[in-house]
Length: 343
Image (cartoon, rainbow, N blue to C red; front, side):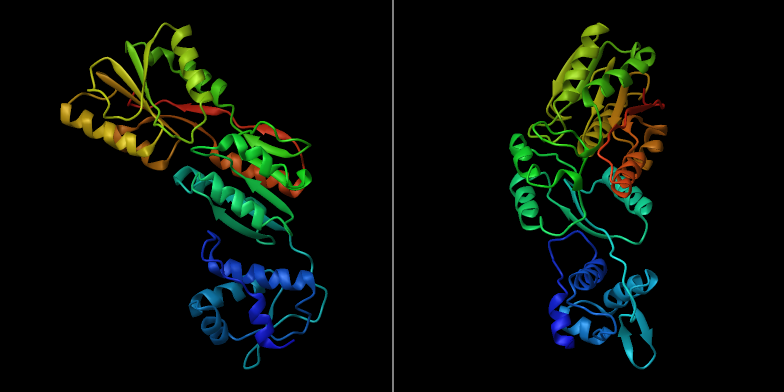
């Protein structure tokens, strides 16, 4: 095979969240699987990759190191890199699609990748809660993946998501984080039960909540967080006779003593803390703070912020198990209350 032809097989997608070195490696793995690259073929040099693909030498070297570590690639000093003249085991290819890469989604990603190990090829994309981009990515990438692992959260038009998801073979599908109505067939899922989970977490916190007379939740307009979370919040407040209010942002109303605030977005948590600091109120006594989704920083801020959060590491691990076991099980990962000084 001519080297230039092999170069043409390597595709670097600037829109992909997959690191470029992995895109390089995945392209070579795809070429091996399709037969376009044969055992004993000589691969382009590091310099050729860098020049032709407009990537750094470090990126090219990292891609080749990854392939060598997985046993796909060999090298001879002074002669270059080549495919060993032996059978190459097919490596599973996964299309991984996240709505965003926040601190907690990174935990999911890291746990998923670690649990899968190195002998897989993963193409990673982020659609920023945009249904149009979500649809485009899935429509263009439906041909040759072993699995599709998808987090379906949208700021609008999410009611149409099931239609595009239903075009994916169900034995190759894992839905992550949120169940979507209308998906037919048997597929894998690792999900949160938002309504029941927030109800149960607040119920667990009802003793410290008893110090306050009103609970306010900050739920932004056009938010990707499922409305079921609001349903569970309202049901808890009504069942336990708490006054409650739904705000669109932290600055909608002046903060008053005797109130608890539940923030869902990190920006609102920052704005809330700034206001509390300016008013010189004591967090955990005069005003309470609960934050949605656990991150390491929340263990430290204000001597510890109480969080309601699922186990994102476990979510990633379970998703990897469904892929490796080729399972169509539906697994629920419940919320956990981490009670700290802010309540």
